[in-house]
Image 1 (cartoon, one colour):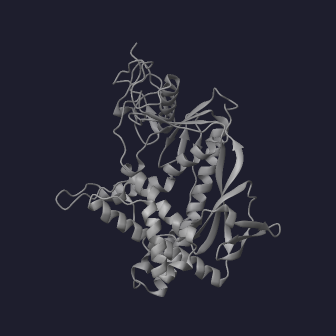
Image 2 (cartoon, helix red, strand yellow):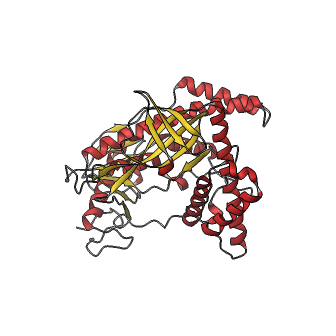
Image 3 (cartoon, rainbow, N blue to C red):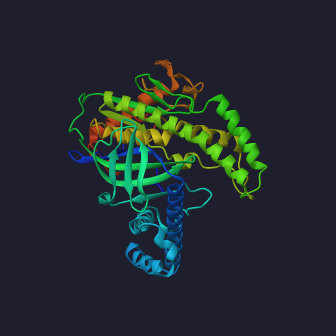
Length: 428
């Protein structure tokens, strides 16, 4: 998605708003215990939804290329007519297919018709949603077992790993690493506090590739998401995959085995981000992050045939390290956890945060001697600090200044003092 151009440190910020005094929705995911027939039905429902999505997207692109317009209402009417002509469409519940068209309509409105992706059979994870909570019934069978009644699937057992904690609004069935899951969207009736219990606390967070998150208080948050043995196993599976024939049964088994490894890695990363976010929002009323364009940062450096790229392998390694640390997922976890504590999450422009001395404000490339060592070159300062901690302190200062001005727009606040381009601070 296209983003606006970079703004100055004083005015470039975005506050992720938390709706005060409103009930919040949260997700609860459980692993299903499907029979063979139910698993085949779920896969059939997902395939039909994929076909409806791709057909609807192709139709929208055809209309847009001819300066026409197509939205959810006429497509839903055409879907009803198509079900009379193509009997196989009736195998899936009607409201599931309608929800697929609603999701497509929303994606096209938010991102643009020609930027929405096709759902490839090889790369898309099968999923479908039951939007009507009245057709979803959940019963608890014991301490570790429960069951849910879904349209056309009947009663399906699942592992009761946590309480629902609220009224069900919808249910989504999906497959991940060879296992089927059901996710309930519930209204947990929690209300965002009007104010944090410690309103004067604040913290800045610097995201990096050595440590996933470093705070201005000097805390380091990091962990390994994949073990050495899993790394070796995954590389061997990649080598095996390269020698197998496309579409073969053995190739499918290899892809499934690779998916199981990456599913464990994803779950560990999600657990780490959730725990880190909960720890930070409980202690701080203001959390400040850099406004990073992660998609642009992780763009390939391969270049074109006319203009080849430079340091392509090094850039590819950096991209993998950034994606492995889950920069965006930490941001999402902070935004979600902040709803329950009343914490404000602020994003500031990242320019010169790693080169500016927090003590005196001097900005120069020579301040950062290495990845972890920061030594101020100002003879009158001589500040020595960990480079990531110094950057986090600069991020915190910029976020506090932006919050104090109350500047929620992209324009310059009339209450903001002029800022020096050299130091990023108000002139003396």
